[in-house]
Length: 286
Image (cartoon, rainbow, N blue to C red; front, side, top):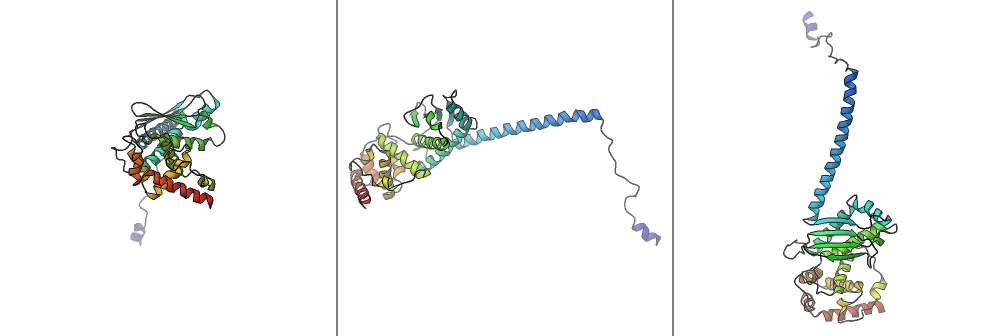
């Protein structure tokens, strides 16, 4: 029996107790507190720097090689301060340009073929110091630099966020379009931009009134002064020959003449203008 009791005894003697560290001296505790506080501050600062670096890297990767600069020429005004707060300090303008560019590039250059893709090295988004004749005006300079001049009026009202995004969409769409070395009709360029705004972002509600408006000329409908009319004609061509808009943009890379439309459409453009005007007339008369 004595042998059995011995086997059931615990491995550790009951008298054994865990070692207890001696209490820290008050002077040591006081020295640890600032060390802990400083470590927390350093950790937070490191996190902020890390997030900033990641953001810069992500924007650079997304922009695919072109620089983006934001300029605020109305910084000393209320609208300029609003622009600074909502679009400059948090890089929101940069993100919107990258977002819009990605959509437009994927539509116009789905294969990202550098031989036909319009070269862009630098996009400058500038809030002008005065009201402009349009919400956004695009300027092109040397070395593939493009400036998106934004009217301060865009920043007015409570819905300035939507107005700003639409202005940047329109400006970015214009940047990535070829223009026949400056010889393509401006009405056609504006019509293509209008088409992309409608179909890539679907921000505009169509109405029967839009369809009912007749074309003034059946022979030059791509030269109509109303960009909405041109966009609707281009939509008609795109539905008849899918990919037409993309091919049209590629065709404007080396220059322009009206015969390009005939070749891309596979028939005289005048014939399509006539059939399109007839279709619109029938719709408006129904």
